[in-house]
Length: 383
Ligand SMILES: Cc1ncc(COP(=O)(O)O)c(C=O)c1O
Image 1 (cartoon, rainbow, N blue to C red):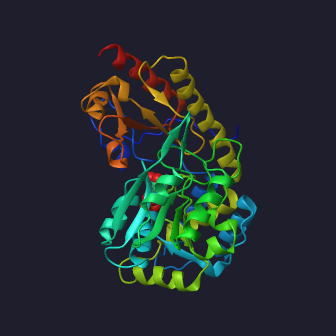
Image 2 (image 1 turned 180 degrees about the vertical axis):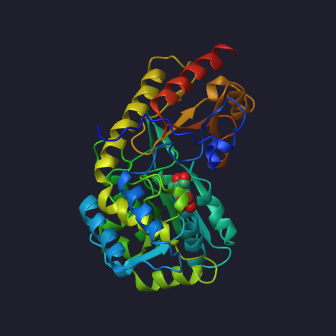
């Protein structure tokens, strides 16, 4: 290993949202989706060089940055995009909101499969659309898209499907066959697909990520793909993301929805993004190895029955495990675990029933995962 993911970096005394939530309390922060690791050295060096320049006036993404995105998509996913399809954004929640505002009109319906990252639902509501949720189906040991339920949910006002691929929080990396069904569904009902692929470079299993828009020209022209280096290279606080929209009319509607509201991407974010895309791959490969280790530790602990009453499905992608805690029968599960030193995300805002699921962010040092599992066992024994 060239990169050391076990290094302790003090975030408790930094500006970290994740760590600040529990300042002064002995609670491990295992909630908001960023990692405790330093960004790749190549990104830090590029930022240092840019800071040394000393002038931070208005910036714009230059052709080499767009080329870095085009090259990255071709190299990583075999997806041929054109630089003109890229719309730069200071965040992907912004992208979800701009997409909701760009599609249809007030009162129209936006489908999404739950549980899901909460802004998939709130973006529609913010933009005066109706969010229509369709539960994912837990079939055997795997979360799947319930296409029959999706079909039943379509009405004459349905305009879009907000889709998370890979999926936060159920950690699925959908297969090509499943994505083809998603594309066919959108085509059949003339829907715009908003495909948030922010976790696409965090696939832990040996399967390639397939951008849904790469499946063919029909699905491409009706898709807004949302991507960012922020999760993978741990630079979410810099705010650098982009949409890829091949259809000129859809792209115009999307950019119009951002006008006068959404600021330009900041100077440092652009620099970090280009460095990550061009030089981050050796670091990313080692990160994936490390995250697989954390994931395996959690999954094997649960599989051995060491957390009685807790189950999980296999984490195919992301650094988030979606834990079923229903059998524990807790009232205010998130509070219960905090009282035992564990700060998980509560499942309810993702659309899960109260006290049935928790999300465990394992994008942290192995030592912390080991400590979290030990506290988890003690919490269950103390009930
Ligand atoms: C699926 C998904 N989309 C978007 C975001 C947030 O993106 P941003 O911080 O760029 O707004 C997250 C963060 O957890 C996420 O999981």
